Length: 359
Ligand code: ATP
Image: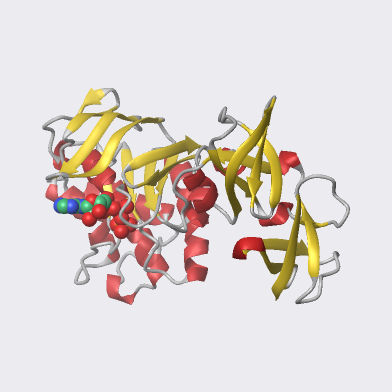
């Protein structure tokens, strides 16, 4: 069985410090949902509140429509996997997996049956008798998942479970985790500061900063239509040009920046005189000397060849740094060259000035 999870105006304070500020969202039944944000933004605090280790200061958490107020962690239909996995090193793999069942007084035959079924699920069916200490990092990861699933939670909560693994294994485990989630069909709530993980695995993502949910959406909408300057600068690479809005026309706005006037889509109804940021993804910048709008004059600082793509680092007036990615078939400019860049207005997004992720 699987369940949905609802946060209804949840605020979590530690003394005067507000770690999570008025968070409202609904995570659907069977969804792979991630909270993504920088260290300290409140992700773990939300997870601890869903699992019952913390009570919200204000608002309600509902799981499967049921208010969880004063229901302790053991009584909730959730299981939590910690960053450090917390496996028992002196037990076998099968004993680790069956641990929660033993605590609940389930008999030996049933424990064995369930452990075998889960060993199968995590593709370790012949490793049940090994000691946990003999396993690789990725295998331990899978055992932690199986152990959490053994008690048949309706919602599995995962607190940066891949952070201890090396890069290659981490990327492999993303696919594994997603595949396991699809096989068991329950709700997974995943927290991470790694946008690659969130974008590749999740059905939907909540991007957080400083205790506030900035945007909830699928990977594509968060990348293509970021709702705030924080999301635009935190998710993926982006060039940000700051200035004042000088013209608004239909769904477009023009910002006067140190590199010249830049026009882009105005999805947030900003007005003349507002402080704003023009965002342009590096892959949307091209070298073009004769563009009659969105033409940015810059000098090439350095070029990093990365196989199929190269990163070109540029600097413009006011020491504004820009990055352009150039695919292999396009000739690269020379380092030190003074070149004109262009971005189509539909590839430029104008957002109200707010916090940027690099600040
Ligand atoms: P990380 O990725 O580093 O774990 P996070 O996004 O999960 O970060 P949280 O652990 O949720 O962040 O912490 C959010 C904020 O709340 C931080 O500023 C943290 O210092 C603060 N905080 C968390 N727990 C407590 C506590 N028990 N008492 C006081 N402050 C706390």
